[in-house]
Length: 191
Ligand SMILES: [Fe+2]
Image 1 (cartoon, rainbow, N blue to C red):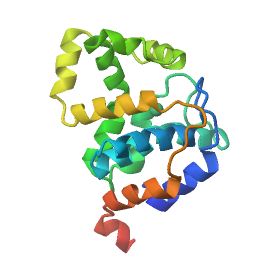
Image 2 (image 1 turned 90 degrees about the vertical axis):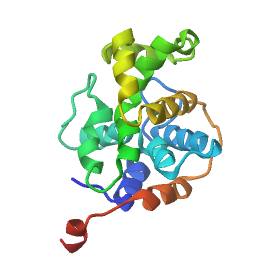
Image 3 (image 1 turned 180 degrees about the horizontal axis):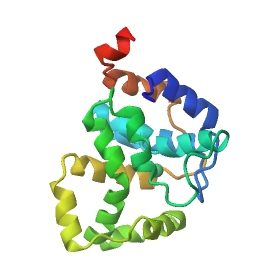
């Protein structure tokens, strides 16, 4: 279940050409554009890696449709489904923003009236499936969570990463950050 950087790269190479539901970019283009935004803002390596991998859950869904349909088609909570594949060998500073990037959208909608109007139609649609705009109490709870601010940054890059044919560095370029933050455990290396 624990994915290595090489396995992650191969998943994007194999399944990244799938369209990002309702968007005009592929999953790979979306990932590269999000990581590119993070890199251009000088984000830490963990957060650039998170930007690249934030929708790895969707890539796993694409893979599983070829196999056993392990993920249902509706709101399959891709931000959480991916966690077991990463949590042993990657730091919380990468995993938590990935986990929180959907709640970050719900939070930003509550905090910033202009933010909602920037969402793509697909993102507005999924917002409802994901539980809708946060209440004041939910915003306060969210902001208490470790890595919440990083998740809010990631979310803005996510929303900007849907531009057809935008040029970015390639997957190998951004995979360097994933290798950089990878922390395989002793158990993993001695298996
Ligand atoms: Fe995304």
